Image (cartoon, rainbow, N blue to C red; front, top):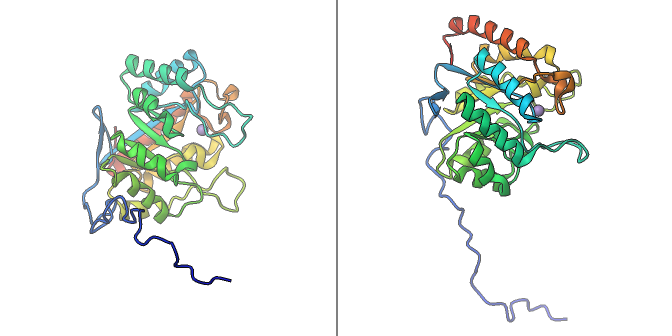
Length: 295
Ligand SMILES: [Mn+2]
């Protein structure tokens, strides 16, 4: 038996062991790095600061008719950014996976007609270029909150990014995911609390309302809330949306469908355009008491 392991092994190391970025004196997301709130400007639509920005639209792009009818409805009610999924991270491989490039083209058409900024999810680095062509804001979903290669590459596009909290991620982990984007030189990160997984089953997830003041304390980045995925039932969405505003969120992202009962995805948690308009009316009444201004 030969115990001499040093024989014939060359010395030195050909692997670069240094991290891609030198650690800053303070985390870029922190109030120490920047005391004042970040305000992200998307073609004149501001997210962060005193304004309260509401993003709305269907879970998925299904057809031109569905998309435009919903877009006109939410736009008239005061939504300032339009959402719609083209690439869907579905739990089952046998569920509708999204309309892909055709859906992206329809979103671009909505943007041209209504001059409303578009947000849509990017699931894969290979779709980044196509999504950047149609979207004003890239959404990184809950399941990809710790997909670090996607975070880095999406960060490098320079596009504003709405990062959803992973449903099993602590606030610290969530902030470090945001740091990945910031470290790429992209300061335009919007954080989104969308519910975490707990033992409770009467709602789809548990909206972590406390995460809003915690995040506002620890970071200068804007914080929006997704009450739709947090609870999973449309009848609870308005209450959670109002709680989010009261707790200090900078905005909402809400699922709205022209016909929730026939939606291909997340219909049970989608508001109709009329229900959405009622919610906006309530938020408009609440805002001055909270020193907020509905954008
Ligand atoms: Mn959805």
